[in-house]
Amino acid sequence: MTTPFLSCDDVLLALDRFIRAELPSETVPLEAALGRCLAEPVRSPVDVPLFSNSAMDGFAFRSELLKAGGRLRLPVTGAAFAGHPFEGEPDPEGALRIMTGAPVPDAFDTVIPFEHVLESEGCIEFEASAIRPAANVRLQGEEFRAGDELIPAGAFLTPEAVGLAASAGYAELRCRRLRVVVFASGDELREPGKELGAGKIYNANAYLLTALLRSWGADVEYLGILPDDYETMLARLEEAALRCDLLLTSGGVGEGDKDLVGRVVGEAGELHHVHVKQRPGKPLSYGRIGEAYFMALPGNPAACAVSARLYVRRAVERLCGATPSPLVDAAVTTTTKLKGRLSRTDCIRGRIDEKGFVASPRSSSSTLAGLNDADALALLPEDCAELQPGETVRVKLVRR
Ligand SMILES: Nc1nc2c(c(=O)[nH]1)N[C@H]1C(S)=C(S)[C@@H](COP(=O)(O)OP(=O)(O)OC[C@H]3O[C@@H](n4cnc5c(N)ncnc54)[C@H](O)[C@@H]3O)O[C@H]1N2
Ligand code: MOO
Image (tube, rainbow, N blue to C red; front, side, top):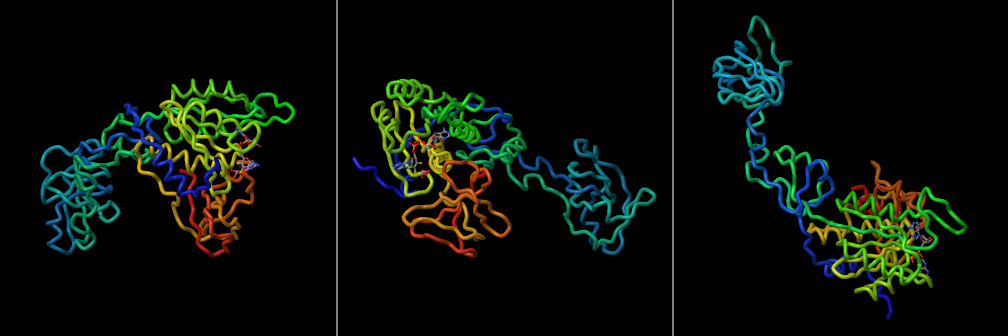
């Protein structure tokens, strides 16, 4: 059977159709929630801000008093601090010394900062025109009302989202539980830190994939290097499939005599092998072994990394019920000439600086160096062989 040749978009579509799963959810402490996918929306149980409070260190008073115009002189009749509200009823004709974050008493609605008043003999003086009514007061509920959705289900939690959930009082969140098993494959591989022999290289991909999947909130188990041996590979993949939702391998998806992964998975379950019209990252397999979904990425490390960013990420989004992220994140000006190949989407590694996209000088698919320097992949479409400096290129951001 000939291998289908698919565009990047068609591969994403094929994965969308193939992966239909609803992973279970679990309760995760907030400290461990970074990168996890929310299973239920986070709703604010409270108004945010919780109470009207001062946005400045200064003096609170009633804006009615500004109507008199001219120079005002108000007696200072008390003080309020963050965490220590003023107790009692403040004098409505006076002012209250107030610090940023301190509750503003109901009777007051305006705060004038320290630097805009003159203080003397227990009073403050200022021009009425120096301050707008209602200035510098953050009103109760002006950001969110109790019951409002703060973060939607399906969102991957960023540091800011974790902080937002904390600000609404959440100590734990319901998140999807995604169990991933990672294997490397190939007799040439040795683990970092171990002896190399003739023709051997260090296993990079398994560590890249493990780190990437962990950063996406998965519970990842790395189970070592699969040897180029059919029976061993079959036994280990079948055993691993029992304990995960997604099984990832790298290497052995090409056309070589010992590229066995496809044959093994074809026997153990269901396999779809495709060639992607993309560089790097042409060969790709996906399928199922038992209940577990399976993806095999190319062995060349840069190809493995690019395919993981584009396609494993999509599989994770599908499994978690998340909104799929687009192939293209932004369009920017390229500052360097970009060369590609017709009928392939070239994923050119590079950086975005204040002038636009700068291609990395390292572009070999056998090293991760070009990607380590990169924060974006310029996606040169299939019908474009070259872009000149100043032209617009579509990019995928890869530092998320
Ligand atoms: N006759 C053809 N040969 C190749 C083709 C082709 O179309 N026809 N495609 C090339 C492309 S493109 C790629 S990508 C690779 C894909 O091959 P595999 O997925 O089978 O990968 P391997 O052959 O196992 O390895 C390729 C390369 O990467 C190194 N490697 C593998 N695993 C790791 C790892 N965990 N860490 C670091 N490096 C790894 C491996 O030693 C090889 O050098 O096929 C091309 N050939
Ligand atoms: O997937 Mo391969 O070189 O396209 O590196």
